[in-house]
Structures are given as structure tokens and as C-alpha cells.
Length: 328
Image (cartoon, rainbow, N blue to C red; front, side):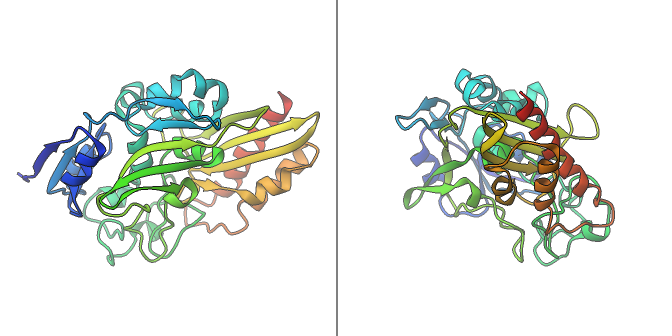
């Protein structure tokens, strides 16, 4: 039996103080990832700080139109919030496309952002995995890599995809992550929060030791924008994306005046596609335009032995989403 210390916190400051700079400590929110990985012996925290008593479960509209979401807001509450449904449909749809009702009732906004990869070589505890044991290698590159492995943002050290649907929608919307740490508070642009594997795949995010996510602030919605999340997967429910797209567009007649595009299931982090957005803006909506724009997202893609199909599938996820939204 593996022993660990347990503490409860009632404020972000108390939680951060209890954590300290201990790299073997972990915050416990919904536990939908942490508890799984502890049971598998993949994560071995020496100290667990329970933050369920921390008052971070509210959603508020800011004066500048942005939406500030507490890190402890559950996925269910966020997906069903009227402001999210009305102004950020892409986010509500992404949340409801993920996991099961039971998991969404427990999973939190901050925990969703922090969830670990679903690569079986990471989770089996014995295979070569640079995320779990730096320097050991990446078994997925020459192994089974059909479903939860990326074609964008990969390196010789890791090709695992980021699993979150919610984060893909937030990448398209644009957001800021607010954190509390030993040195005080700071903000991290959502696009910079998740890190590419590069030579250091064990470092997955921009948090420093002891820092706690307290809020996520969504950019103000695009006036007159339409948005949707499209998730393509092996089965309709309880499955991670093979490829997904989060798309926001604003139309003037048949002309696209603004566009935001992000992808999931194909990248090692939630993948924003600014080159696609630039190709769409100011253009007349058409299938030919969408097809050409979608190809731009995968110009630097790298296919592995079993996941090359994700390149055309990812393009289809963008084209289909744009077609449906611009026809509305």
C-alpha cells in the first residue's frame, strides 16, 4: 500500500501554502483523472490537497463582456449555463460531447484543462514513455498509434494527443487562465498554457510548482457570431475524438467577416489554426474555399504508421463544420 499525506483547503491561498513547491504533491478536485492515475500507479503523489472546499464554483459576466469561470465549476454546470449556451454554443457542445453524465457531474473546469494524455503506453506503467519516465523513449511511435496519437505538434519524444474537448472550444474562443501561486497571482494566455512535447514531454503545461488554477476567463463573444463543435470518433458516445473542430464564424451575407478555428484529436495540445482563419476572412463561403483552407491546417502534419487517416479526417471535420455553420 502506498501512503500519502492528505489535507483540505478552504481558500486558494491555503491550498497553495499546503502544496508548497513539492513536486510530489497534487491538488484534488473532481478526481476523474488523478484518482485513475493513482490507482494505476502512474502518478504517485506524496501529498494530496483537497480543494473541494475552495470557493471557486461560480460563473460571472465581467464589465468588458468576458465570462469568468471558477476552476471548480463542473463540466455539467458550465455546459448548461444560459450564458454559455447563448454566447458560446461551441463550448457547451464540446462539453456535452465529452465523457458521460456521471463524469461531467464531477469533472471540473480546472481539472479538465489539466487532464493527462490517454496514451496506453503512458498509462500502462511499464512501456517506454517519456512523459512518465523522461529519457525512456516513446513506444507509441513504433507501436499502436491509431486513435489517441497526434499528427500535429509531435516530436521524436512524444506523439500523444491532448484529450480534452472543452479545451479545443476554449482555444477557438480565446481565453486567459488565472492562477494563484506562492509568489501571488498571474495570468496565462490559454494558447500558451499547454506546451508542445519537444524535448521535454513530461512538462505538459505552463504552471510552476505549487500554482493552482483559480479561474478561466473567456474572451468576449464575437458579436453576431455562430459557433459549433464537431467531434468525429469511432463510436457516438464515451469516446475520445479521432478528429474534432471548434469553429466560430461571423457572416455578412455570404461573406465570412471573422473566423476562429481550433482542432482536437490531431494535436499534442488543443490546436488553434490561425492559417485557416486568415484564409477564410473576407472570402465568400463555398466548399472549395473550406477545402483549401482546411488543407492549410495540416501542411506541417506528420503521419505515423496507423494514424495517417487523421489528416484527411481532420480536414473533413473543418469543412463539414464550416459548411453547416455558413448555411445556417
